[in-house]
Length: 237
Image (cartoon, rainbow, N blue to C red):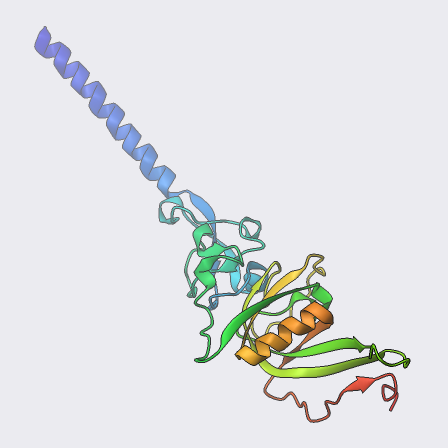
């Protein structure tokens, strides 16, 4: 009787295991949604800018990597922390906050240069469309008043620095290189870090302290030969 009981119990357990294994195997073949890279995405590219290179694919559940995402909404406002290759499943951990230290090695500071950060409203930084690696011009405006003179203050604006390397952008989403994507205008200030010489760092700080700064996005084809100090006397020249 004991032998018969053990045989029945063993048969029941074996049947249950086989049925469970079949269920697990079937579950693994069920399709699941996952965001997949369809074109190379460079480190530092934002989720919004990378959207055109991402697509939702249906894969067997067993093939979906743990930590992967199935929607752009899961990584919106974040930046690729590494280069992404075609066919790669998008992991939440691969996109980080724009101010993350994981992006600190995105741009190498040239020898002899030092970094200085300035905080500006978005309209003064090309609508927050800057990214690390861009080069900018620094335009400064001042109002000079000679304390020993009765003459009115002189207001001036001038492109005081050219081809300044941007090493970090924080507080807004940096744009990916050579991409033009319409987005809502940002409303918060943007922290821009620049690589400059010691003297130019002093000039930038002076301009922030006592004047106003705007940044221009410069490219290889940009021409600064027409730059000159602008005042109320020559603005309509």
